[in-house]
Image (cartoon, rainbow over all chains, first blue to last red; front, side, top):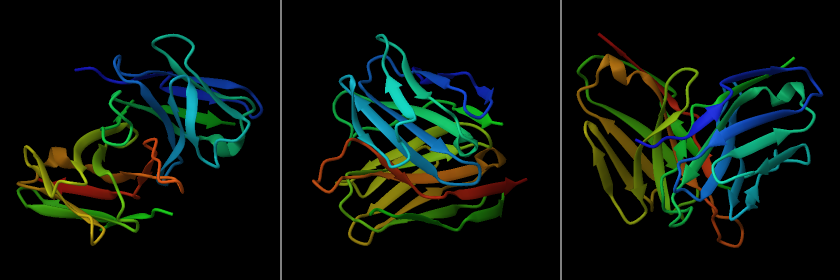
Length: 116
Length: 117
């Protein structure tokens, strides 16, 4: 069964460093998302992406964050200068091309980011 | 702003019991509602998607109902097993002020379920 994959599973970085989190969405999906979950808190939306551009972003998704679809299979989240409060589990999700609203979102296993 | 609440926050039951998890949302203008399962330290597994036009959706021992007008959904788990122990999350897509949705999900805080043998 097709699934969303994410690498790495765990990333440890120093404050101020840049990190890139990688995701491979399900192959025929065209809508892509990043969410994060700080330990003990709700899952929070960061950004949605369609047709090579951001569809919607949250207040969390400031200038330190960027997303990219560098090729036909990968979807990346970059944090330019990490802060302690960026420590969280980051989830990538994707949904089918028939529209973002009516279809299930399928989530990857997550990348645990630890900022020291 | 859409708010999603789940009760109870935690539930512990003996194996074999039927149980109900509750999800409520403040804005009834939803397109659908999705239930997820999350194991500790793991990703989210989609369990059921129930469209706004549906009242119920079933998958195996799971049954989800939706009452848009009252802003509620329930997830019914029949004959619970220790392997059902996990956190269960509900989520709804959000529409922006213009009524457009790009699929942004708003999540509840989850119900932690423990099924003991």
